Image (cartoon, rainbow, N blue to C red; front, side, top):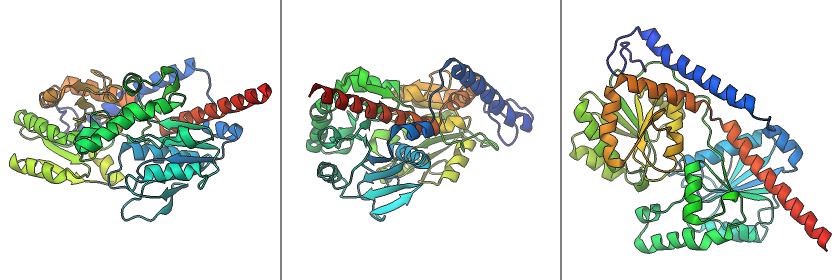
Length: 434
């Protein structure tokens, strides 16, 4: 149950305002605490990130990524890399991140304790990075993390240090959504035919069990080599203040075809028909913005459906805390990080049933997963049913409490440490055989 500034829940039952503000956070936090403590009590103690760093011998780690957090089209993958790199740097690791150039930003910068080096253009960054690595121009490193975002850097071919690859999700139909037919064919061939054989011996990390399943099924990579490391949630995301006095539906993401904001706008128009006071906010920037603005204008929805562009962290947090529902019509996600960020603020989700979403949302407990055509009707139903909304909100808050960036950084580094140990064992065995 979420409160509005007049003490009325989304379904219309009046309760004292202060009581309404406290019911959801207290119930959700207690459920989360009980669940987490019970799981932790049954598990053996795992070494902390600091302990892993101290004993691993890994002091210099290089990360390869397509885009940097400053890139205008940055999203969840770039945020994920930043959060992990920041915590590794805090633990005493010399971390460098190499990406493509970010328009309007210098080639080199330090952010959150780690170095960012931007070389080459949007597409040339891949061969140039591979060539530099093969020639040893940017090393030596104790460990390497490759972020495979559609187009790989082919680190198995040239990297000799311990390494892991983070593959958030399979791109599949995304190639045809954003590229010309000829270039899309190149991307599909690279992802499905050329790259997989080269990565069969590589430790692959991914965000969710559903993405792991797709990597196995679509790319044919060995299940034994694929490890799930869920993303974290910034501790700043908490419930606070009051919900919007009118139903407020929020969506966050890059304005690009794979996010299907055109489909989402149709769904919001459908939900608005049942809830004439409903408002909606779409946060994000991208090259589809002009088309989406035209679609909103053609529907006469400018007064209640707003595209606000990119916002800073404080503005986003304020929107999460005022929203009633977080929604997404995306066609493909590694996880859906905005879903769990909103959940940490006590906001349930209504989202498309796709890989990634099926892990970020526990269907029927923290939100609802539906087919795209059912999105609008389901949004309207959750806004109407106060009991359902309250139950999903409490479940979302409890589920979100189990995710931390500290654990994401620890588990990712632990995978790199295991690869280093495996490489040392292999070298030792080879020496004995000589």
